[in-house]
Image (tube, rainbow, N blue to C red; front, side):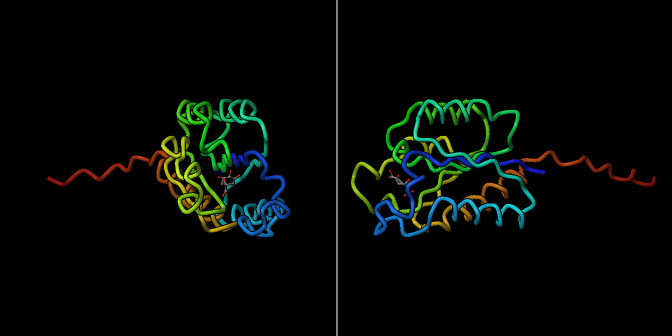
Length: 159
Ligand code: DQA
């Protein structure tokens, strides 16, 4: 069974009460419940974590290598600033998908650059809470393709 580490970055614990006009009324708890349902359908297991601290996120990514097959991450504000999280993602060697509730390329200039996305296999942005489920689906499809395929021995041709 594939194991996926889900990381929510800073201030996402405030979803539902924070800038509702941008992020909607959905809470982090609801997002996590939706992800667990999707994970069940996909037959994968999730470990979900949220942190407001850059170093803690770096540590979680750093210890993920042998424990997980992939990372689903919303680095939140660190998206736009964190060389440390980008380096941690690259160093992990794990496929990661970056997700955002809002459409970061339609917002303020400083949000229109992602420091972390180049260390990810893909980015999903702008679908609200659905960004998470879509990101998980994509990540699981990607990880499944990465699994070693059993060698099929073809029958020897009869002479
Ligand atoms: C966000 C977008 C970031 O720019 C912002 O700092 C967040 C949330 C999103 O999910 O839309 O905290 O990552």
